[in-house]
Amino acid sequence: MPEKSLSAPRGTADLFPPESARWSELEARIHRLAARFGYGEIRTPMFESTDLFVRGVGELSDIVEKEMYTFDDRGGRSLTLRPEWTAPVVRAVLERGLLAQAPLRLYYIGPIFRYERPQKGRYRQSHQFGVECFGFPGPEADLEVISMAWELVADYRMTDAVLHVNSIGDSACRPMYRNALLAHFAPHLPSMSEDARRRVERNPLRLLDSKDPADLPYVESAPTFEEFLCAACREHFEALKSYLVLAGIPFVVNPRIVRGLDYYGRTVFEITSSALGAHSSVCGGGRYDDLVRSLGGTDIPAVGFALGLERFVMMLRAHEGGAEPPRSGVQAIALGAQARAVLVPVVAELRRKLDAPTYMDYQDRKLLAHLKIADRNRARYALIVGSEELTAGELVLRDLEKRSDRRLPLAAGGVLAELLVEATA
Image (cartoon, rainbow, N blue to C red):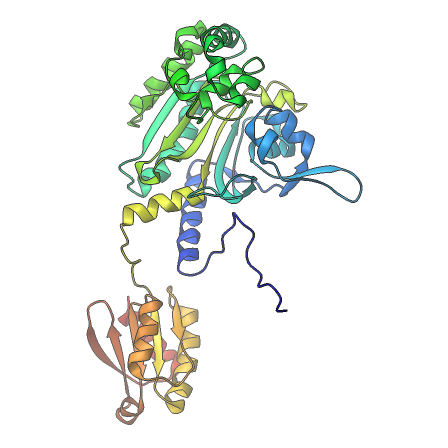
């Protein structure tokens, strides 16, 4: 009986060229963007103590209840593959004492792991770009992190993106809102989902994040948090909205945003795109002033966001509308062994000097087959040498975008490479 063929685990994806090049370019933009805002990169382990996420994310959150990849190691310790980044970042900076001289600005790019039903834009291993800003209690820091996320969206000219903002108050005003939600949902619980009935007493705010069709009519008619904000939270939220206007960042106030993690308070926000369909959120974040203390630190205010890279790339594809990526680099085409011997050192020199890819296929093929390979590689130029060119002491430099040819002298490798760099500039 033949062995079953191996395949990637469900809910994961392999990346190949040219798609991997799109990811590399996006990550390079992120690194440049974070540097402009003064953020340094942090990298944490892919697995942590399970207790970190139970304490940090919230025992009743969907992540902890349903989605974590948790296992016991050989020493009997319960470990969990990282389902989100903020709690590990806080653990890391507390362990190293980095908050003793707050403020601190950090960013990350890397995978997270959640066991959920795979669907468009949602994987069991996905990737996030996020930032964490520690030490600033005021709305200026909220504006800073929102600006960074919005800057990335604007950099790609995603005109359908929408920024949603809300305030979910703090420990002073949240109890009043909690009681109002309990009073609102209590008469409707028999008609609501099993999850809603189970969670309502312990955390009714979680119901506002429900996507269950049975809950939606009652969620839509629920009182809004803005009605119950205390004076300090209202002042904070009004100041943030003023700053967004001054910064020229368009937004809408969305009273149904609560975020799915227990550590948030005051500001919460999301960026959505119609290009993503029903699962329209590509970025979410907010303020989490109590998390550092809950994980063993002192009272350190903090705000951050996480942006899903898979969904962001989906947005990019939707906006490109199937357009081909731009051509770049040179395809060296040798028609025969003698031409190949001439071009191999030229290719080596081009790869040292040309700030673009240089491709070469080493098989004996007809010119048309080589040109098809150049098209697959999205090369801008083809460098063609055959017996006719060798006899004439020339080569053909074909512009594959403009469909025009130039002839250049066959000089020594280094000299020829210099001519080609100049010709393709």
